[in-house]
Length: 310
Image (cartoon, rainbow, N blue to C red):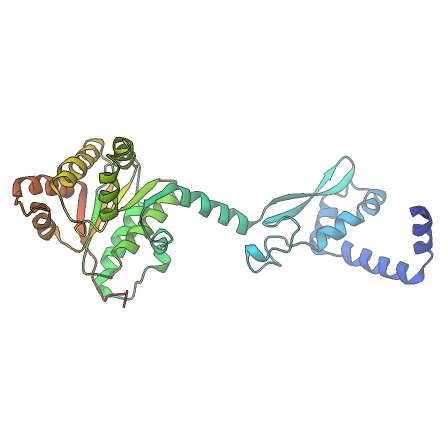
């Protein structure tokens, strides 16, 4: 095998190689970012250091900086996807340091925020909802959207702000608006839990058998922000009303924890629904107690407009 020095000497004597090398060298040193770096650090950089660092400078010139050559994060052209280069001087040589690019920072922040939102049986489109994607094209719903956005903008932990009782017809976007609130709060590092009420009650009932009921109840009732999606769609029993829903709401009243609801019922309709158990028993007083807690915790907000599901 021939020594590498012999190969380099042969290349050095090749006129085509020399020409290409000089062209690449000139192109590299004329790169705007590289010119600015060399000018800024001219007191530390001798011609010899620059010459020995040409390979690093050439590498830097071909990379994407500030996502300028990448349409999306998944299409990042850099060797370390999601990281862009910065020229530095280390040990008397020019080197490249890599940091997260703007798109990677946004992506990581979004993933981090998503972890703040816990959910039980809630569709993915609800969990990914944002105020930018909420339909704002109907005067009947603009008031609800504005109230929700104002709430998020002015949210302060421990301020005893009431949540919302979002009610209206099927398909008008109540649950989606709930998801947008959760994501907006997550951007402020506020953790929340969204639960789909019918499935929640079914799971809690089955948790009696495996002795996890108290553990699950504690996690739900103590969530920094708790969101009940579609209350009133469940088959109500005395047990879920009096032993599950009542104690959760009582705890949140005492601890002044923000609580939200969506429902197809207004307050009067929900009270009627809560008054009747599975067996048809009418218990108006117990339903009224639940409603007093819901009214204490929330402000009723009508979400109106056309059925978007169609």
